[in-house]
Length: 239
Image 1 (spheres, rainbow, N blue to C red):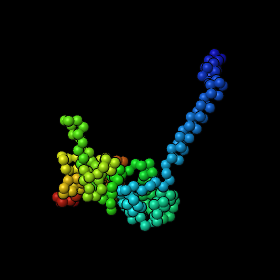
Image 2: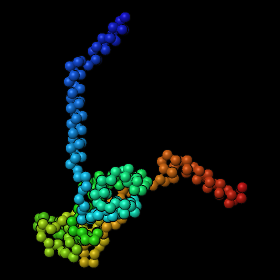
Image 3: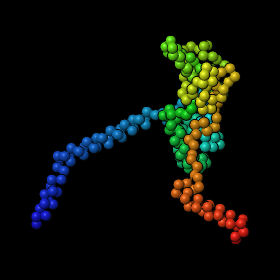
Image 4: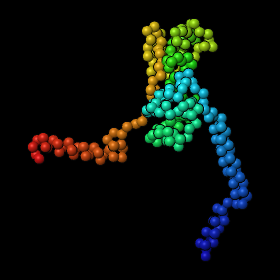
């Protein structure tokens, strides 16, 4: 009987009291409501159809820069609004296949809504899919000079622009006084660089399996070694 009394006593000690349970449950409920309200508020603040940006002004350019062959489906989206409002089921009915392409498109739509652009997403002066970059030198101190990468209207120089027209861009660095390095930066004859809309410039590259991937790699490589030894013996006349 003593062990039974001991177990029942421990059960009484470890059992949460009614006051604790009654206070813990509302707190947990309030926390869950707060998380749901925050998520709902955050999502409601995102525009359903975001505005185009200078580098990506239309449907075809959007599908071009995100890559993975989605450019071939450009004719299936009559408007910019349709691109951002069609559901996954509607995309399937339009023939956007395979499913991973639809998921990829939906993911990039959400990123675009959130302002998470790829390279060149912060460009302001773009004409016919081409933007020009120039180097601006700024004296931080009498001994230190900074070089900034500026997006300028085509054919313009930094000195010809007002301060409000100067647009700094990310992802590029100055190499010396005239050269600019960075993704898709093409050097120009008189200094600076040119950025042109290129298919897949925002693409998330998929990895490729080597010898069947991690799970099958050992087996496939073993079979290859067996086949190589067999071929070598056949060449030597043992078979």
